[in-house]
Image (cartoon, rainbow, N blue to C red; front, top):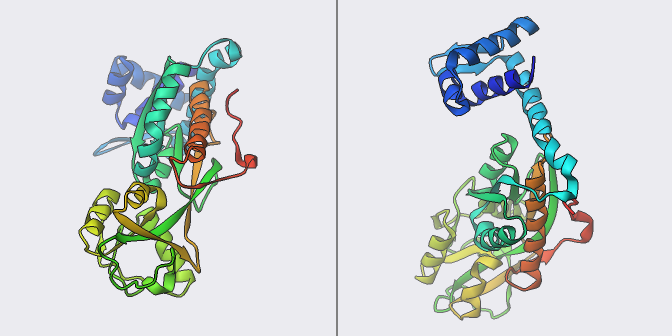
Length: 320
């Protein structure tokens, strides 16, 4: 088998049909079918089976697909590897980020990349951290900013920062909190009308796990995944919100919201730069990953992001 056959086979698996693969590759469908057949004859086992929805890889085909992706990625990396630092990286970089990270990081990253790496095109994909992580594992992303992963196998994860999660309310709706201190115990919010993200949202999982560890039951008044909608509801006096401090900094500084830091226990969320270790990163993702790391930390140093930076031992060494 050769690289062309591996490329054709991989595209059929990813497209789910010979006809769609032919359209992507701009190759006649019979030619693709013939090349896949030759691989099956060489290996002596079926690699694909037909279903009502198209074609799917057999167990052996799935194993070949993993090897094919790795070989093709290695081959694509050869020019940049040989050129080394003599040529700027080029190509598309697929970067997944949760919405709150993208709100602060995406624009400065794209602007900086245009100046430093003009032949690189960044495609930012926004979604909840769990979806971003899933897409990274499925090779639909090159890089990701994620909040956490219980299973880091097959991934490199670099802790960039930790941010506090806060309780906040409209300045005209202090409600049941009568004291003035800037901190509050998690146990003291159990009976408050809370406006928080719904189940399966990463922030909600963090709130629930902190409450469970403290033997506290949290029963929200309203569940809504949009940070902006949570802030709008809190501003209207519907209840108390729980969000990262960076999401409400502007309103707190402007006197719109009053915020309390959680103590006993403190609730913090970590932000990681992540990428797969099961396939090699080309020069362009390496360069953008390193640039994103630097910009992320600059946002904290310049107080555009209220957070605590990790120490330098977590710094990636992806690109000069």
